[in-house]
Image (tube, rainbow, N blue to C red; front, side, top):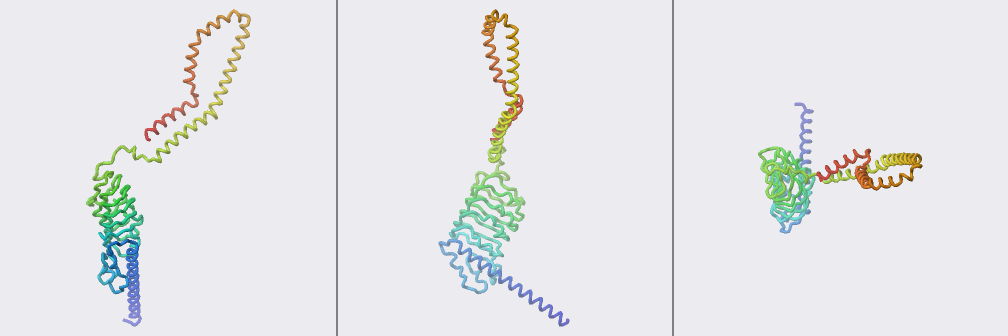
Length: 332
């Protein structure tokens, strides 16, 4: 082997060793910062986290902390955090994102409150097990849980979670066990990718579908409120449109038609008056008698005319409006 080849191999080994040490150092520093931020963000009334002494810089000192599981006892690389039943208070510790190698998290049986972070998949990208049960988390279940692609077990039971279970959770490829029991969840449940997945829905009175009783076929209560409002507003706009069309188009036509009929009637009356003037006096009594006899019939004709006086140009609009009104109020 030539001198130049030996030199190149030596340089390559040296660079790889240097890069590994830098990456390991970065991992240790981020894990230390991760645990510091968790300790600072949580209230610890019983002092369980007082054992987390960051002044000790010996190898593997993080692995001696209560509730901390490391990859190797001599490496400060956190594999799991298990802080169950410690009476911890506060919200979900977002500093957990700095534990870059974390695969399991157990915060069960504490007094944690607030919503579960919407970016949970960013905080725990490699998690295989997450247990947030027996806390006081509220709000909706984040659909981003579905992006935790390595997740095998998820426990969210015994919290104050509400809303629907995101259907995206059914796409988790490795999920084996998941629990939503004892919350305030409602709506249809997701269909999980694996039929062997163990799912607990107990004590969520308004869940349906899947292994639970089927969801009601009556969707009138689920009809979107915004859509019902839109139909109602549309109906009233249609009525307004009909009125505008009538006064801008139909009313002038009806008025002109009425004027023509009125003038025609006047002309006929004038002709009758002109030609019947000599015998007008002799016909006065007969006309008065005839008018008296025809008065009830004229009254009936007037009543019928008023009832049937809808302009023909509006007849189709009125029919459409009535049908639309009936449809809207059936939906509402």
